[in-house]
Image 1 (spheres, one colour):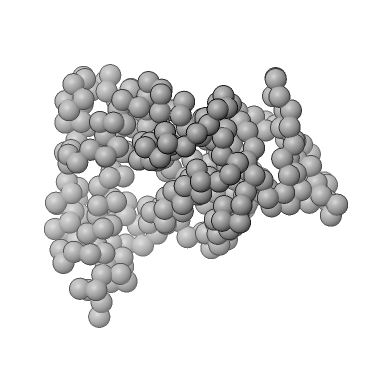
Image 2: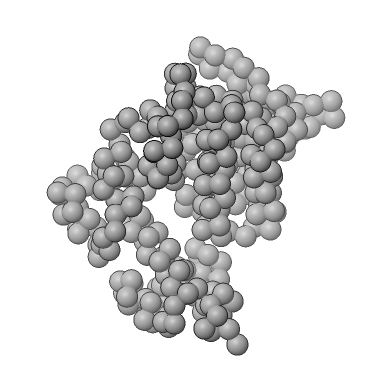
Length: 291
């Protein structure tokens, strides 16, 4: 049994991973065995060629070319069917719960306005229109060039999310999203997803939520899928990227303004996250620093 996205590298060399999103181009031929797979995160699987058979305790269905399967956390995938040319190809997009719920909260008014009479399922298939299909296919260049731009991938995921919301075959997707909106985990999202406060550390976040640090950290990770420290760093790096692209401040000023203790630490982590140094980011995109 394989666990995705952790084991993407065992089935493909064409993968792209960051802290929130993971992409894999998966190809199978007649020499490959059927492998049982469990998705430890949420996932969307877009069938490029062939088809996939899904088996659960109470359900069995087949998903064909140009269709999508939505997997919730800890759900299983069993069998891939080959086409006449004995090939099966798919794009697997795995994502953390925090990314999904942040979008659910952002577009909650829209989700409530759209009607869905179906009951929520742990996994289901979705037909694609031309827009959704083109968005999925636009992930392929990102995988093949290994350009791990987390900000770009999150924007593309948001575009895909909205496309699925507006698709004609969206009833089961909407039903699932509404269960999230009605779930107990949303409370911390209401407090933090669009909170305007600039928190200095995890202790100040815990104080804001009126919890002790241990309880807050545990509940926060259950809701967001990452630790409050990781969340805080993500917000800081997003703001750092914005300041590097649009402000006249130098790297040391940005580093201190956002609460990073060491410019050297900030530079190293920025390069690991975005693939370029802060100075390279500034020189390539900021009009004030273009020479």
